[in-house]
Length: 257
Image 1 (tube, rainbow, N blue to C red):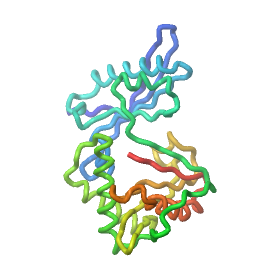
Image 2: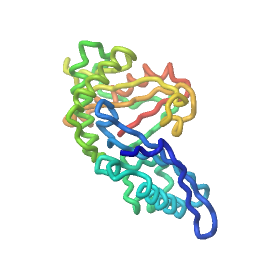
Image 3: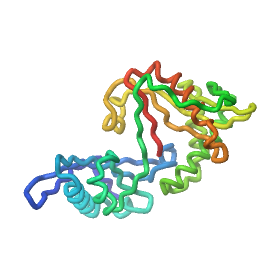
């Protein structure tokens, strides 16, 4: 099977002569890739540059992208386990009809938080501590349950090895970063936050969303469905932010999905 190039330029000309452009990047998520728990095997990450053309420009670019995919991408990579991904500000509502009209649906939320903003109060009965290697099993179970829940929201394809991938991810995070936080209620694990500090300049994906510098992030926060709304998550996030923020010079981010 032929493999499409890693990236390609997409252009479209509007009726008034203006030209809009975008670039599409090919991402593969193999069987051993944690991101495959949430994402299709093949993702075409599209970055539009609309200028002031709004919904008209987005519609034209998506039509051009559709044509490129049909011409250049083998049918084997245009299956139910593939998708096109676009990151776009939700407040740009003028573009929303074009996105929805081409079958795009919102699946991922990225929220940023400036340094120094007080965290919301949590449940005072919840004890939050740094997870150790002896907590990996419990933390992984909580994280895997959240991944299954978010996978339903995203419409992600079920992966037979999802729990194994999640356990390996939690184990590495506990061992190497020390920024996994466990919430306990009456001695029972009721939540987990997997956090870290990173510089978007070193990430091909993040650098398109965030400016360079040290950012703390909450990559995954998990609380069982029957305990949500009781302040467990708030207590967990408050401690996680207080621990990550001192190392983050820019701010914090929360990615869901």
